[in-house]
Structure formats: structure tokens, C-alpha cells
Image (cartoon, rainbow, N blue to C red; front, side, top):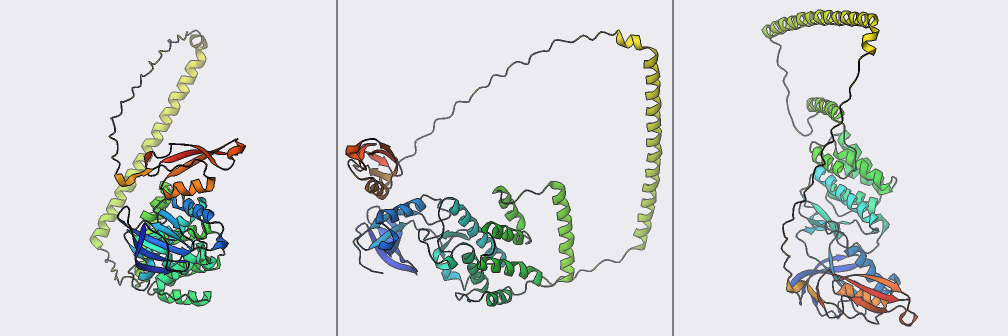
Length: 435
């Protein structure tokens, strides 16, 4: 990595981390007077034209901040690219691999969150980024954020294989990853410690499937969900999965049955296993007096039940007799029934309710800070790619349309808002390109 560069606005202050394709620095924005994170990497001509590289980073920068480190700006010089990232409170996951205090359950939750982020990113066309401890920033409630998501790295570090290796590293608390999958499975079993074999086996099997990439990514996530639902704190996870429509809600009756079965199974496991808690369950001896009272109560209930049966039978017979008498009466007088005139009452139309729309309260305009104001650049006669890059560098969004004009083919003919107008960052600039 070449250390010299020609950037004027952003200053490097401290190297934070060296990654496979670049170096991450703590930096400062001299114009807006704010702290930033600077990811600097050498420019590789084999990656394609520089504007295309910028475009790929720009596409990723529009994704939600809760999945990826948010891109604030991009700058180029003759030999390198600087990506300006928004600094977040947290830490590099790699720094905590050997010292973290996460439980196995919390580690599985972390892997599940990363898997869901990968799945959602693929829908946005972003894939192939590294799932590696040095490319993950931990924020808040164990929320993983990908730092570099615009570079495609080794396939063994992306998606399922990357999740499998990260799971092993977090459970074993190590930076070293064995090459052999079988050896990794044995070490993982030992690292899971006092868990029972029934609890260890699903986790180790899931890691093997992920490392070998032998199942679809969706199947892997569903398998991880099933493991999580076996833990005592699974109800919060189950609620989240249902809200995201990742699993179907359980019907109330079935849920009640499963809850009783799970409770019975949990009690049985407490009796048989002392892996997590050494609980001695003492069953009380039966009380003879209480048994006698229970027997008398049972006999009373039986008598009451027999009495109710006779009352119900008599009521049914009475209903049948009344029905037979009515039938005979109707057969004897058919004319009276047929001569009856049915008078239909005119239907009363329901008045149409008058809907009133409440007048919305006026909303006070949000004050705009001076640092959020930019000047619209002049795009006139500028090639399309250069116009896109210029707008991106000025923190502006854009939309363009092609119009028939051979004289201005490939160049901007007009724009809205016009040049030199002051607008808020993120404003969309519309321009028209000849073809």
C-alpha cells in the first residue's frame, strides 16, 4: 500500500486496522470538522475503469446503515481510492475473538443476524464481500456491521463458508482456523464444553454444512432457526422470525400442546442431566388423609355426572314428543297454513354515513444546518459518467433522461435545479443527456 496521496480534505490520524485489500484509518474531515474513518486501497486497473469502481461503491452506499458501514464520500488520486466512512461506536470483532464474553446462544444469534444481512444484501445486488472477523464492526446490542462490502474476496470467506468459520472462531475463541473440516468439528465439540451431546451435535453439523457449502443458504438459516428455538430464550427470536415472515406462526392449540410437551421434556431433562444446573428434585410422599378426601370428591363427581346424564336423556325425549305433536297438528290443517298472507315490510335504507377528514396539524419545517447545504455543480456539456461522479462527490442524488440530440450525444444538455443553486445534501438533481 502506498502511503502517499494527494487528498486535501481528509487527513489520516491513526491506523486502525490492516485488511486484505486496504488499510483502515481514523481520520478527520477538515472542511466539516468531523471525525471520519478512511479506507484507503490501491487502485487496480484490472478492476475496470475508475468511474465504474466508484459506481459500484455508490450502489452499495445507498443500502441501510444497520447492515453496512455507511459511505460518506469517495475520492480518487492517481494510484489509490479513499472511501470515507461514517464512524460508529463499537469495536472490531477480530480484537475480541479471544476475550469476548458471548455465550453460545449469543454467538448463534450473531451468526443468524449476519446470515439475514447477507440474504437481504443479495436482494440489493451486493454479494461476495468477506465474512471475516477483521471485516466486521460490532455495534450496540451485538449488532454486526460489514466494513468493506464493495470488494469480492476469497470464496471461502463469503456467505456460508465465512459464517461457518466465524462460528468456529467465536466458540473456540481463536484466530487460528484448521484446514481440515473433520479436525475443526472435533475442536468445536471440545470448545462447546459442558453442553450435552444432544445440544452439541446440531451446532457441529450446521458448521460442517456451512463449511462444505452443501446446502442452500436459505436452508442453512432455517436450520439455525431450529437450533435457536431449542434454547430457553427462544421466544424473542421466534417472535422476530415470525414478524420477518421467516417462519409460519404456530396455531394457538398446537402452541399450547407443544408448550406442555416442552415443559414436561424440560422437567425430565432436569432430572436426568446435571450439565447446566445440579438440581435435586424430591418428590413428596403421598398423604393418606389427602388420598381419602380425593377419593370422596371423586365419588361425588361421579354421582353428579350420572344425575346429569339422566336429566339430559329426559330432556331429549321431551323434545322428540313435542316435535311429533306439532307434525300431526300441521298435517290435519294444511289450508290454514297455505291461506296465510305474508306481508313484506319495505326495507329501510340505511343513511350513508358522512365521513369527515380531520385537518392535519401544520408540521414545522425541519431546520437545515449550514453543513448540510451544497452548491449544485454545473453539468452543462459534461459527459454522463463525469456528471454522475461529480454529483456523487457533492453528496447529491440524481436521475437522468436521454433525449434525441446528435449534436450533444453523450453529454448533458440541461439540468434541474440549475447550476450554483444552494440545496440540501441528498437532493435529487435531474439532467438530460443527448443521444
